[in-house]
Image (tube, rainbow, N blue to C red; front, side, top):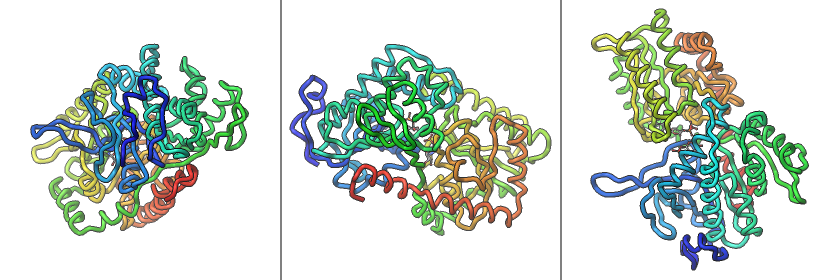
Length: 481
Ligand code: ADP
Ligand code: G6P
C-alpha cells in the first residue's frame, strides 16, 4: 500500500495529521511478527500471545487493511509500511526508555496486575503514566495519518486505552472500535488507579468498546457511571451527546484450521511419536502457557506434586508435559516467577524421578502451532488452571483438535472461557484439594464420559469460533468481510 505523503515522524512534530489510504486499520502494541536478530542477521518471527494468534490470520491477504504496532525492538524500523506474511505493517517505534516506562512499567507492572485481580501488587508511577500517554499519542497520530477518510480503526488491548479518545479528537470522521483482550477488573480495584477518569474517557472515545466476558462489560459500564458524567443503559454509555456501545465479544480460535491440522495423518503420526518418546504412559497430562504468573502454574505443579506424593499419580503411568513460552523476562515479577517454577520442576523430577522415567517434562521455549497440535493430540488431559485470564485460547485449541471426542479438559473457573465451556472439569485453582480431585477424575475418566463432555465442549468452541468474533466486529465497525 502506498505511503501517505507525510512520514510517521512528522505526526510527532505537531504537523496536523492528514488522511492516508487505508480503509481498515488495526492498532495493537505488538505487530503480529517481531524483529529478531540471529547469526544470519535480522528477520521476523511470530509475536507471542493470544491477540496475535486470533488477529493475524484475519488480516492476512486483506489489501484494504494495515496493522500498526511495535516491532519488538528499539532499533531503527523502516519508515512507512512493509509487508510480512501477507499483512501490511506499519512499525510504531518505541525508544529503550519507553520500553521500560510504558511497556514494562505502566502496561505490565501497573495495568496487567491490576486487571488480573491484583495477583501481584500494581505500582503507580507518574513517569510511567507520562510515557503511557506519550506512546498512546504516537499511536493515535500514526493512525490519524494512515487512515483514509471515514476509515474504521480497531484498537486492541490494555496498552492503548487512551488511543480512542485521542484519535477521535484528531479525526472525528473515523469509526473507532476498542477490544480488551484481558479481563476488565471490578470497580473496587480499578478505582485505585490515579488516572482512572482519563483512562475511562479514553476508552469512551470509541464507538464500540468490547470485552471478553459479560462480567468485564458490566464492570466497565458501572465504572463509566461512577467516574464520568456518562449516562449508562443496558448496552450503551452516553457521554456529551455521543453514544458508545459497550458489549461482550468473546474471542475464539480458528476451529476449521485446527481440525484439519488434527486430521492430517502426519500430525497423528507425530502425536504417536510424542507418546512413544514419553514411554507410552497410560495418561499424558499437558499444560501450555506463556510463563505468566496469572496462568496458575505454581498451583498446578503443587497439585501434581502432592498427587505423586500421595500415590494418586504414578511415575511411568502418568506424565506431565509443560510447555512454557518465555515472556516479559525483564519484568521482575516474571523473572522471580520463572525462578520459582524452575525450582518446583527440578524438585518434582529430583524427588520423584527414576532412571528412565521422570514425572514431568518442562519445555521453556516457543513452539509453533504444528508442534502444539501434535502435543494436543498426544495429551489425554489438558490442564488450564489460570488464576485469572481474559479468555484463554489454549483450552479452545485443545478442544478444537479433539475431533474423536476423547480427552479431558480441566479448566479454571477464572478463565473467561469457563463462561461457555461449562462441560469441562471446572476448578477453583486456589483450592488445591479440589484441583487434585479434578486431576484424579480426569486421569480416570472412562471413554463414554470423555466423549459426552468433549462433544459438548467442541460444540461450544465451534459456536464461538474466531470467525464469528471477527464478523461481529467487522459488522460493528462497518467493514466489508
Ligand atoms: P495469552 O494471550 O495470555 O498468552 P492465550 O491462551 O489466550 O493466552 O493465548 C496463547 C496463544 O499462544 C495460543 O494461541 C497458544 O497456542 C500460544 N502459545 C501458548 N503457549 C505457547 C508456547 N509455549 N509456545 C508457543 N505458543 C504458545
Ligand atoms: C496477552 C496480551 C497481548 C500481548 C500478549 C503477549 O495475550 O493480551 O496484548 O501481546 O499477552 O505479551 P507481550 O507482552 O509479549 O506482548
